[in-house]
Amino acid sequence: MAFEFEVLLGAGEPLRRYGFPEGHPFSVDRQQAFLDEALRRGLLSSVQRLEPRIASAEELMGFHTRAYVDRIIRGSQTGEGLLDYGDTPCFPGVFEAAGAVGGTALDALSCVIGSKVPRSFQPIGGLHHARRNSAAGFCVINDIGMVIDRLRDTYGVRRVAYVDIDVHHGDGVFYTYEQDPDLIVVDIHEDGRYLYPGTGHAHERGAGKAEGSKLNLPLLPGATDADFLDAWEIAEEFLRDQRPDFVLLQCGADSLKGDPLAHLALSPASHAHATQRLCRLANELCKGRLMAFGGGGYNLGNIAQGWSAVLEELLRGSWR
Image 1: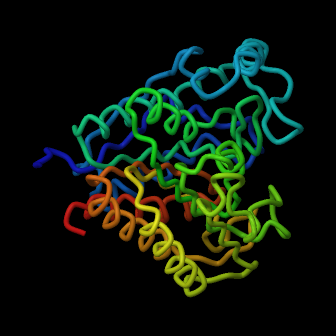
Image 2: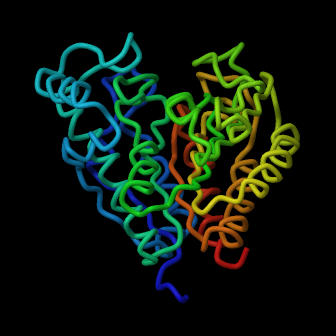
Image 3: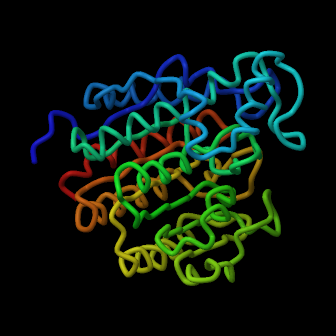
């Protein structure tokens, strides 16, 4: 099938607003840092732009509990309080900002599943710590979970691979679907003994009927591209054996060298390699269907370089 564009890019003002008050590591200038570098590399002329859309409360409740969505709405109106134990504060308009993350992800999914475009990238997304009933780790909502549940409930796609290369373990996705044998998880992250959220140990491979459907590959502080590539070989073999029908990638830039909140020493080459190989796997097993989300990253230069490397490989992905 021929496509006018190979990659859908979800970015715009409503997504820029997903960030916290001055001094918080998750700032509102992250999207622009990426867009400036992508423009400099000439990448933006090759993508189809997707304007952000704010999800309704009902759409958020496709993953989150009603009680929690009501908490977000109240916090958005007052701009006061916390949505978790301390990392994720309320601010005026937080419901709309978080809703833009979720609504844009659902619209991108509709385009990918409807064969309008094979791949998508949403830099402000991949909020992998939030649970169904709470925020966590700068993540007000869990757009990945919203996409997974929509894939199952609306589109009938059950066998989904979630690949997470953010420096932090994607606990909000992992434990939500820990007993789901059709949610395949590969998570390469800094060892939880040294970093938030302290989870994602190698022995955690799913529970019950889902035992063996999850793969955690923790890296020691100071790990380099060579260490990542060694882990990736294990990850890719696992993914191929699991034979997914759809691929989701969370490509947090906080695993790159110099991030102020973590201790790995990867370069953008690791992100490029993972994206390239996932494009090939998606072409072979998933009709090309791959959605990527930016995730974390608190060094603006790393965000610009890492996410631009991801977008370059997504644009090349049709011939991988």
